[in-house]
Image (tube, rainbow, N blue to C red):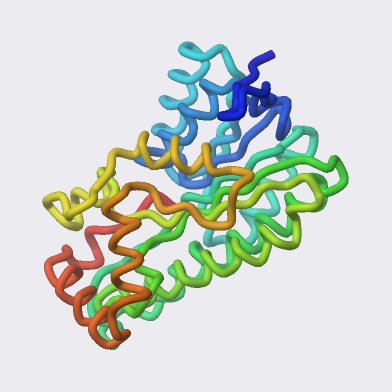
Amino acid sequence: MVRRRTNAGRLRPGFAERYGAWALVAGASEGLGAAYARALAERGMNLVLVARRKAVLDKLAEELRGTFGVEVFCCDGDLAVSGFLETLQAACSSLDVGLIVYNATHAPVGEFASAAVEDLMRVVDVNVRAPVALLRAFLPPMTLRGRGAVVLMTSLAGNQGAPRIAAYAASKAFTRVLAEGLWHELENLGIDVIACCAGAIRTPGYAMAAGEDAPGTLDPEKVVEQALSALGRGPVVIPGFVNRAANIFMSRLLPRRTAIAIMAGSTGSLAPAKETKGES
């Protein structure tokens, strides 16, 4: 049994004891999702890995089994398809899934008025509809057991309008508000909820879109550690000092029009939509 000592010196249960034997990571194929999988496996949790690319998931699962000795179940499929969510729920029906990380995202870059309708609807399906449906399916068993946790990945881009990633930024605003509401609803039922409001992260998708680090860019492992450490202290965690300072500056000190203009300057050099498909 793994226990952690809190700042006050008391022993705190390990993740598997505290939340349940299994964690589900959606958007687990690489980058941040893979970092979450490794961190949770290190904490002794078995894993359900969800993403579209089966070969990549299988490779990660083999690594986790060999390194940490945990059980790993891979469920490859498209979270934008409602039938897949039903398949996923059925596949996990016998598992004590006590922690959910929703990291899957679709982030097309480009002018909204010229974007393909299908691309914009995929933002809604992956970033909005899928986490709502997934949580609605998995939260009731957690409430019955009186324990569980949810980590929803959101973004500083969702704090104001973000030109050229307008639909993505809007979806991340939804995610943050959803997490805040669930945090209050579920905090007395033994379920911890956190919105991880991240800035730039060194993932393959970000490198492809941006080309170089923005101020405050963090490694995935640092984001994951700060998010998991914040469980039970929600509703929102912003990893990195630079990002926390930027959040205060952009959301509290600047006029909204100015904040949007600054975001436009940051997103103006991002690669076209066809090159940034996220980790869905």
